Amino acid sequence: MEISRLGIFEIKNLLLKREVSCTELVRAYIERAKRLNPVLNCFITISEESALIEAKKTDDLITKRRDNIRPLEGLPVAIKDIFVTQNIRTTCGSKILENFIPPFDATIVRRLKDAGAIIFGKLNMDEFAMGSSNENSYFGPVRNPFDLSRSPGGSSGGSAAAVAAGLTPASIGTDTGGSIRQPAAFCGIIGMKPSYGRVSRYGMIAFASSLDQAGPMCRSVRDCAILLESIAGNDPKDSTTMSTPVPRYTDWTVGDPSEIRVGILRPEVYEGINPEVFLAYRGVIEFFERSGVPVTYIELPHIKYAVAVYYIIATSEASSNLARYDGVKYGLRAKEYKNLKDMYLKTRLEGFGSEVKRRIILGTFALSSGYYDAFFKKASQVRRLIANDFYRSFSKVNTIIMPVTPDVAFKLGEKISDPLSMYLSDIFTIPVNLAGLPSISMPAGKNKDGLPIGIQFIGKPFDEHVLINVAAFYEKESNCMDILNEVNL
Ligand code: GLN
Image (cartoon, rainbow, N blue to C red; front, side, top):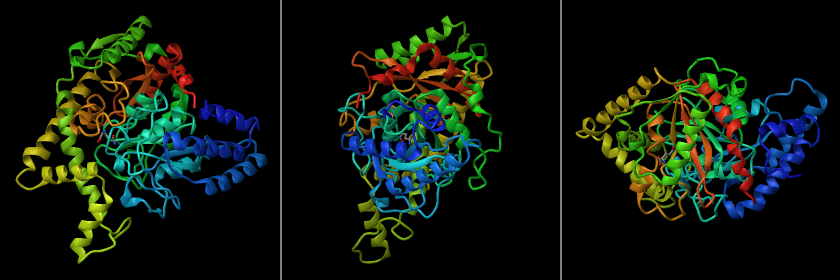
């Protein structure tokens, strides 16, 4: 069976028509993951035993009752290793959690399971989701399926590469400043960051709590809608989730152009970006114009401050969130130490990688007394201005189109010793997190070397259904997902 090109929808059909059993499917994915992991390094953990037990249960269930099949019944799926999974190791890409076996499931894990999915693996990522290349993982970098010498992006690089290469039909990633959308763009797949408050973060290891969101990474807009429908909604265990009803996202995959009003920024904003990326972006605008969709200029005067604001807010929150890794409650503890303080020190020294340490130091500094007003408070004020710019624009349009990244996937090793240039590559994704908005990243063609280029559609808070409509129309009319046919692994 050729599974590498299947998405959620195709798998569901195969299972319902009984052309394949769930056990066969899970076995096939595990076999493929094992065969290709030495090349791509997507998986940190493959949970073969528990997945096969669940698959057997699903097969019994499907045989017993043909109707009343749950939305993700029998779907094998691998997720980013940032979501805690009961009895399955969860590392968050860090040495400090190398042997951590959580006692409970994250809400999204629970919801995937309740919808019938079978989790068969945990995917590689930058340590604590800090990074844009996957090179900050304790478990080594992931390789881009379009060019093995290049980065798949990050921090959800394992998820993006695994979906693109058909090692999992779909995945769930997280996005604090672009970590779903940027790797999706680099690997030619679809990635959606939902609105802040749309998806529960209970059991999702915290990086920057005012920015973190979980969302789908997949091969079609329909799959994105199916997954989002399963994981979204209020969770009493996460007080930041909203009780706004969850629309039937799958009803919005028709792709009706008459509902779309596009906003774009003036070309000057994009001075200095890769010309091929700019051309692809122009191509998408022209596509909407040709389709009769109104396209208007909008102004986001404060987004130029977004990267600076983000690296104060995200590092401050990270320095506080990561205080819990102290060698006492869980995770690594240094072997030899003189006293309690020495134990904390050695544990964190040995357990964290250099990027994580850099962020903790930056964040601790930004929050320190005497500097708080100059850094954290000022950054929070500018954050508000950035959000207001977006809100103002949404009185005129219902989706803003922007490139996802200023460049295509870079070579492994190219940026890792220059953190500032790495940080600046998130210029178009970070403003969206600062404003708490939903955004979907879609393929928009490729450069002359065949590397994917991404485009993002940004919406108002809780307008995920609007974005699904835009994305579905664009997907249908542009055949943008054909790019995945070029992955041959
Ligand atoms: N690349 C950004 C960072 O390093 C965003 C990461 C993320 O979204 N998790 O912080």
